[in-house]
Length: 451
Image (cartoon, rainbow, N blue to C red; front, side, top):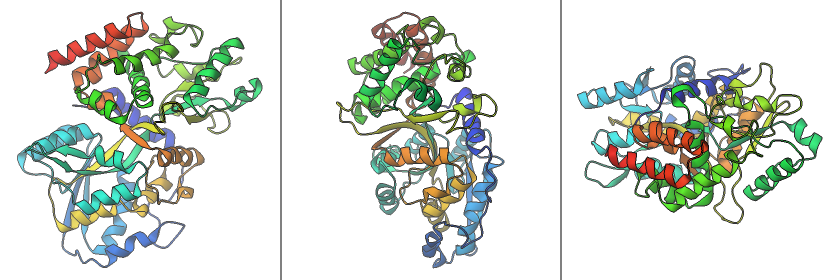
């Protein structure tokens, strides 16, 4: 499994967009501000002098300096020496290091798929029950985060392997508050209300949605996020999990239903700016432009938290443009599912200081320092949300905290030939006129062929 190049570029984009205008102190002085400095108390009772913790991850400048600032408080409290190494080819290097027996103490994976693979080879150490319980008790939708970190070991038995630290949010709809006010529209709170609002916009003679799947060789990937969100809103999380690992076939009627629900938006000529033909040809970076045109070309755009990187220069989020949670069906009673991504901290090589550092990364303080620097969201329930670098991040963080289920981007967890191949092209074929059943059959055929 691998993360596609296009999605790596979007991680960079979201960091830039979410950090814009932030002038926070990378490493606040102990005792300053409204941080949860009490988080350090258990570690100040530890003497880890002379112990070294090596950490490998994907973060380069400026993220590496933020992370080093976070762990400097752990070092001061315990006497341990933490050495972080970032790499833009982390996924390749960590596999080499693990197989060669030169693993770091902690490894920070950009997605759980590769961590799962390494765990199945016996190259990661299971974490203890106390860490698992910490996540269950202190993270919103805690069971989801435990599930995303629980993998079969080399003997096929499930163990808990990691703690998520830094999360991205996908389940968002962007809109212009002024346009909504001019037409008397309210932000919908359920999927039923969202569909009714879309129909009302059509009756008013305007296009509800901007949708674009274009992305060069990666054309089609924005539709995979739509379908993933629909899966979480139509079915129990276990169905989503089975779909991702193909124990629920891609052409299962429940998956076809989610594709068809996406089609109710993307293949409705009255719903989409430019008509259905524009969906497959409009570049995703250009697709939100209709929100800013006069008169509006569209009123809503479903896209992840990175998309402000492609808004017109000078756009002020919360004024010129805003967002709301992509809502769930009230009638389905599935709570508030959220789709996203994130980085997971694992332990390839255990020592006392590494275990302590991993525990420190579950504390409110460790999260708050990065929150204040921007480019960071967390589902931790005990952080001080006022420390987010801006109101946009705070509100997105609250969506994560209100989630009842969190699931990782499904296409990133599927084999590359599917998640970054047949799924993408299948969605282009779907908006081009193929039926959901035919597309689902072709993707399942590709999965069978890739085994």
